[in-house]
Length: 371
Image (cartoon, rainbow, N blue to C red; front, side, top):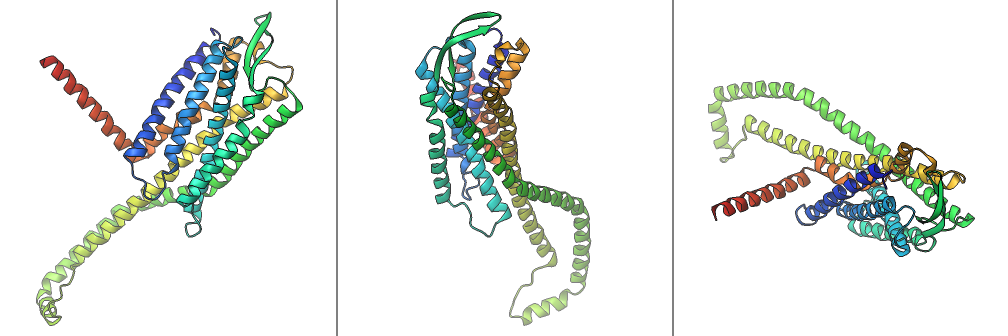
């Protein structure tokens, strides 16, 4: 426990921050933020799974750090291993479905989309698949009773492990999980490559548009001034033509220019919101990929290096090994911060809640002082 204290502190901090952030996301997206188009449909689901992942991963790894050689309960070991595997897999597969949804929406806008029915079906399929490959851990996992060596001392130990007995079947099983994880990452990347191109084109187009905005406004103002000058000179003709046309009114060029400019501004805002949401999901998926790579590498090394144990490393090496092995916890922690940075609606509602909380706190302190 003393050797891995830095890792324990990081785990406790990440578990707390991730759980609080994901609870805030669930609360705001379920009650305050409207999602008529379905762009944010998977965000509350992902936040719930991330909250479960923070609790399961944080609890298991913290207990494991404190009681590495004397895990307190075999049943608790099996349940926590099952929950962390289920939550991590569910989160990864939801991100794959999100990538598919963004791909269809951006790259194939006139084709078949993920309707509400297919979104629900996809969640059902993900649930069945994750239960399918996480449930065996309830049987093969648990507390393994053996002898361990640490600091040149050999003693009886009771460690919580993914598989109590190593066999060809367990190696094949964990190889299948690793294969599913790698395939999930590769498919997600393949779907987001054209999406990234579309996002790049959108933002580059916005930069070019902003560079020409000032010039267009100057030209529009000069044209409007010229048209207004001509209109003043020929006002009698316009008045007689209006009377001859049974009192029909003509729209002034200046007003038409304002309406056109307003329409262009609204369309530009909509395009900006779409591009920002696409960029938000891109960052979420990049974080997911980066967080899974070290954990997969450690998992593969654990079951391929038969004569190696990380307990033989130095103190810094042990902490680094555990940090990489548990790096997937980052995927469950950072998503609320990404939502808060990119989603203006979520940020606005969160600020409102914080402001209301501060006002109530100030009013309570004032009332307490007056009484």
